[in-house]
Length: 301
View 1 (cartoon, helix red, strand yellow):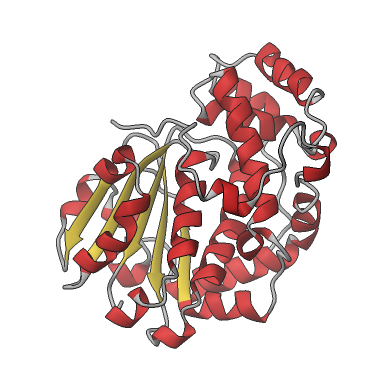
View 2 (spheres, rainbow, N blue to C red; view 1 turned 45 degrees about the vertical axis):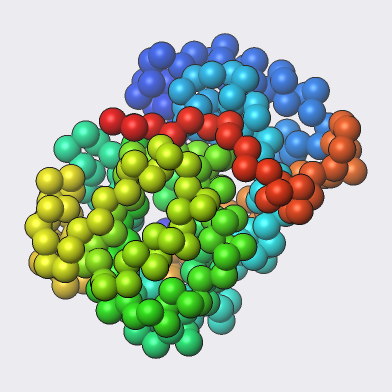
């Protein structure tokens, strides 16, 4: 598996003619006025991605960029020591992370997640999120901006014991990051093969969901074909009746990809905030999760 290359900035301007070089230059100038942010380590692609996901609003982009790197600094469970270690290895044995190559009919990119190993004791949720973020960062670095992003979670083989493994603070943090400052235009979240305890999962999630995200969630019953209105069946792995690779190949290729790109994560770890230099009050995990801020508008079709 080769080392990934950053998506060329030139092609971003071609893909998104409504974003100009001047837009990115202005964001770069603003960065110089923010001593706590890691300006020297942020690429123009980073700036492009935040500007794109914020619907080209400079003011929203500034707030989202600050929050994005603040959370990457403060939430150690997701963003610290990002390397293929024993914990990540166990996650890759436990969960399938499939970045599907076939987009939706609108051109949105999709990620498909499901359990591979069904013993809840091996389901360590903070590590599952950490592994997802590592997979995602490589994918986005290589492909750049997308018109939309869709998350599909297959509940096939999930048992009630998996729900009891979801620590409330971790759920809150991942949903906050997803809704407020992840560099995506989120277009949908699908739960497939919904089990009898789906209502219990939704009760856990609902306190941390903005209305826009709640409205995007689609729950598909066991064996239902309703998902294929959104994502073509051939996009899925072979075991799900699709034409993509099989689970073992997807897993092995992701392991090799994480191994080959350890330098990418070393560089990414420099994109952190120095709270000692922040003008005004330092940001803390306690302060952030005591407030349900609302910077980034979620997209709804």
